[in-house]
Structure formats: structure tokens, C-alpha cells
Image (cartoon, rainbow, N blue to C red; front, side):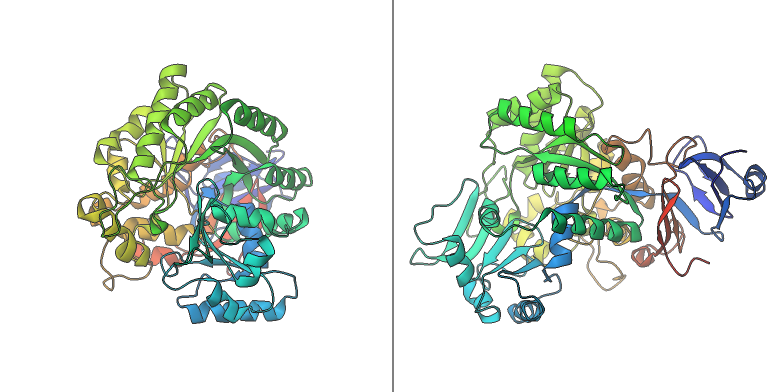
Length: 543
């Protein structure tokens, strides 16, 4: 057959297409899959010039899609700041900052990735950072992006004093005398970042290339950048026009509660019109309805259950949610919602129900991300409204942020419905699996292992199981990273399954994750990643 550029032979190909679920070989032409069949059949189709990729009997899958992560911002920070992800104590955090400061002579010292479950008002303030960086402004951002901290020089450089008011939907932690401690919550983080020297757009472009290379090594060929603005769009457009993107990028543009509906819709409509490239598209509107449990900004139906009590407030009023969701739905935007608390989840569902009632149903596949807490009465509403539950299963395990913080705060009864992914699936929700990187690893195999075991990776028999009734299956996870995720990213017609006519986005793995011990899935290595038939990652182990 003319036009065949490459063939994959001797593979255990799982297509994720029910019409032809398995094959031994496939042919690629024009960057697309042109045929499936046996090795002998596909060899017979190919000319002598076709590249031959021998999978050696290994598992071949569609390339994975991560439908909620922070590619551009996370890539810039992780590739150019101190990595604080492994710091478990103030001393370890200080050591990482000192080492980074010694290697970098910039005006500011920055760090990224510290855990909000391990650090907070009890052990993190400007004095802790002063001990590591006494001579320059320093800013560190938590892995969740909802918390940050400045040292004393950083507070002075930004003009943060006792007289500085909290920004809307943000909070400066203060001591007993009303002086800022340096710790920042929610939009106080953005307040600080906006006043700091800004990375250049080339810095961000390098971060994107770095992040996508990391994604490719883990078998990811499609991503959804989960909160972008005009600068992100400019950087992505430049990379798309240069042919420099090694994964398909969809993006959701952030809407602010301070905007009117008309202002937000006009801004995002213009952004969407400017960002329609084969490898980069803006297709959705992002709404943060609440914060996180760790700093008490997650919005719950009832107050927190611990001694401190209180509650988080919705970041948009119910009237705003109904009006904005209806307007963006009518303009055929997908709506992508951050919702941690059960009130935020309910408010998102109420807003999507209002939009559906006003505009009628259409295949928007609106997404609610995280769904850490949910009232069981809201479980069936996902399926009824055609809403995708965009979940991060790595968090669904006994670890400090859950066992020591979240569960005591929400109490035993609500804790039974924390990360209730199996219940969502059984109630009819479509599940898309994702990482929320850089909050946690983007490695899909570690995420899948925890989705299946509800334990940290590689901890069989050594760690308590978190709500075992909420375990997912391998098939759930595969669908959540392939066909479901591609559908949620509005690209199922082009990718997500190994179907003739679709892009040849595929991966070759070192083991059969459908048959191995579930506690070994997290060790899976990607040997080859193809994007439209082009190699974007190849391990030395692939002969």
C-alpha cells in the first residue's frame, strides 16, 4: 500500500475501540493509522522504505491524555526553581533553598512544590525562609498552588505590611500583632506573583518544552492546561506555529469572579478565536468555585467538623454561577470547574443544570475537577447532566493531607464520601483521570495503581487501604486516560483510540498492566511514545 511510513509489528495492541479491540500490528501513513491486522498482513501492506517498529510482544496502547495539569506555569517553575517536593521538615526545605540560592544569582530566590499537608501556619513563616535566604527576596509556592510564603525581604520588596488589606478571595496570614507572617492563601498568592519580577515568555516556552518532554516519557500525548490567560496563549501560539509542541494541547481559560459575565465572555471568545491550531486550542472556561481543605477555603455544605469549625466560602455567588455558566454554555464553551468541597460540587452541578435548562443539552462534556467531597445525593447528577468527573486518584489514599488534616476536618460521615470515584462511576459518571501536576506526579501508572489499590504505590500489605469500596478497575483507568479523556478534551474523533483514520498517537510499555500484579503498575516504563507517528520518546530498552 502506497504511503505507509511505518509499521508496528508483533505487538499486543489494545485499541480501546470496541469494533476492533485487539490487533497484532498496525500501519501508519500521513501520521495516521491506516490499517490494523496481523504482523503478516501489515508486513504485506508496507513497502521496503517503511520503518519497522518491533514491539516484541509488548503491550501497545493509545497515547494517554492528562486532562487537568498546569503545563506552562508548572514547567517554568519546576525547571527553573528550587524543587521542594521532597522536603518533609523545615530543615529540609531550608537546605533545598540554600542549595538553589548558591547556584542562582538572580534577584529573587524561588522554590516550588512544598506540601500544604506538611507545612502551614504551625511551622512555616518568613523567619523560616529568612534562615535559608537572608540576603535576597524569596518566594515559595506550594504544590497545590493555593498557598505560598515570602521571606522578610520578599514582604518588603512587595510592600506587604500590616496595613495591606486581604485581596478578594485571598488571605495574608498575620501574627497576634497583625503583622503578615509571610504565609499566603488563595488569591493572596496571585497578589504576590503579580508584583514580583516576571519570567520572560522565553522562560515559559522553555518550561513548556521541558514539561511536555516529561509527559512524553510517561506516555502522554495529549494535555489540558487547566488555567490559562493571555500570556499562556501567546506562548502556546508561538510554539504551535513553530511546530515545537510534542503533545496536543487543549486549554481552559480562567474566569475571575470580579468580571461581569459580558466582560468575561468577550475576553474568552476573543482568546478562543485566536487559539485554534492543530496542536493547540482553547475550548473551555475555567471557574475556581472554592479553595482547598488544608487552608479551610474548601466550601462545604455544613461547617467543618473539628474544634476550629468554620467554613470556606464559594468564590462566585450562586447567581453569578447560574448566569455565567448559562452564558458560556450558550456560546458553546466547555465549562471546567475546580470544586473540592461538597458545597462547591453542588453549586457547580446547580449551575450546569441551569445552563442545560436554558440552552438545551449538547455534547459539551462539562467537567468538574477534583470532587474531593460530595454529598451522596449529588452522585447521580453527573450522569444525568452529562458531566465528566475529572479525578486525581493519586490523592485517594491514607497520607497526611487526608488522614491527619482532611478527614478530621470533615468528620466521619462526610469522610465516607471522600474521593468517591467508584460510587461516581456506578452512578453513571464518565471518569477522566488526570494528575493536576505539579500538585503531584504526572506519572499515569503510579496514579492508576493508587486508583486500583487506594494505597500509595508499591505498598502492598504495608499500608491501610483508604475506602476500599471506592477502588477502580484497570479498565476504568485505561478508559479514563484514553477514550474518556480524549472525549473530555473534545478530540475523540481524532485520537484516544487506535482506530484507522485517527492520529497515530501510541505508546509501547514494558509490561502488561492489564495482567500484572496491581502493585507493580506504578513501576511501568514507557519504551516508546509516538505522536502522529513521530517518535517523541524512546527508551534505550526498546531494541
